[in-house]
Length: 447
Ligand SMILES: CC(=O)N[C@H]1[C@@H](OP(=O)(O)O)O[C@H](CO)[C@@H](O)[C@@H]1O
Image: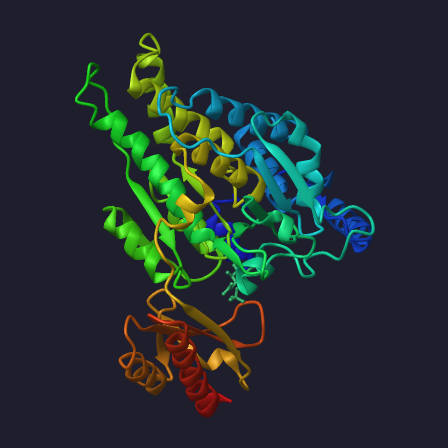
């Protein structure tokens, strides 16, 4: 495994090398002990030097490593400065003449009692144009990490997290997960129950894709005063868990949509193959990556156009530039993702409801099945088909054919000792029934 990693990353072996290893930890008491063990272990390796970067969100640490490797500033205050400044820049670039809906400034954020809420509290006063209230903020005694709160809870249960109630009906809300690498949005539409309208990773991806495509279209099809263009291969990367309605929506826009196996390491790698790669898992983990070549073309285009500041191409180029600064290109980051969402909603003059109604999710159901050996299931085609045991795929196909808009796949989880079953169909009853009958086949064959 180590040798493969060395090969994949092009790390030269032999000779004398030095390496800095950046370490971060979360708020749990075990963090201190684990940090100490890691420091001792790393510093025992000749040439390796461990640096404790403090209590951080996971994406902050990724950003620091990414920045160090690029030779740019990499401290926590540099991270905050970049977020705050690029968000301000996005707002300065809002079209002045659009009229219509004005996005409410109030945004309530569920911090999942983790580190994301703590960090958001630190910078919220500097985020112009937003009035952020953090709940489940991670303060001592407020609650347990991810318990009845957080992005995973809200996405799976589709109900309000702990600490939200009828007084929040109609207010735009966001939910981070404990280490702030996942983001979903939600809104309560009625005070009679705690159900929410959910915007998951697929819809965040769709919003980002629409925004980026719009800027590219302005730059490239301007019919224009200035004959400049920015050729860009834009790729959308999803997994089999992406709701079928989102894929259809994105393909309907003429976008190139590709699939990888579950896990952001696969999505991120695929996205890097494009000039602009946008990837998200439905659970809210994702980001946008831009190739170095694209960024340098964008920079030179912006410079060429800078003498014509009233030009719409110039504004679109500057917006794209600000977005490359705002989004964390190292990894999915709930804080930077949230600020990009907020800037784009303001740009489009969309309410939460407008965004939510972009398309309607197909009803879906996920089930877990305990089997003797989950590795006996082998999948292919980005985990959408079972290759072994082959009889299982035949059974899945047969069941799926009985349902309108039916889609179903099974795969062994990479993080739990279970087989996951996912089913989609035109009604919830049908999705439940498809998932249940396929789960039954899995149990019978492998249980
Ligand atoms: C269906 C689902 O949500 N799967 C999750 C889960 O992976 P599994 O391999 O399905 O256990 O954990 C991964 C790591 O957090 C996350 O990337 C992925 O999306």
